[in-house]
Length: 101
Image 1 (cartoon, rainbow, N blue to C red):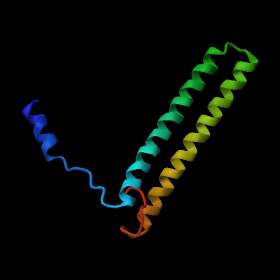
Image 2: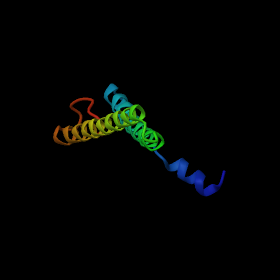
Image 3: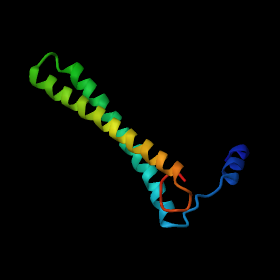
Image 4: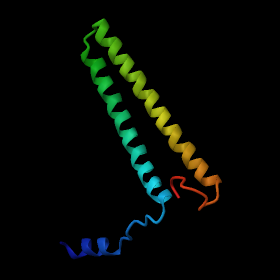
């Protein structure tokens, strides 16, 4: 390995999972990012379906529904993320397994 890269990896601290709250917080971060990725993927899929429907009424309706649900999924996921972030900021640290601590 390149020595400069080895130094970067040697100085990086290992994740500390001392409590169940720490583990759940890490998993919640992964779930949020995965949900955002899936909702964004669904949005792109709906956009391509809308473009490729070529004016067919049934295909247009399916594509619109897919776009609508993708946008709703993005909004719900982002709201959940920001609510969890807000709650973790107003509650004192160490009082539970809130994410982002």
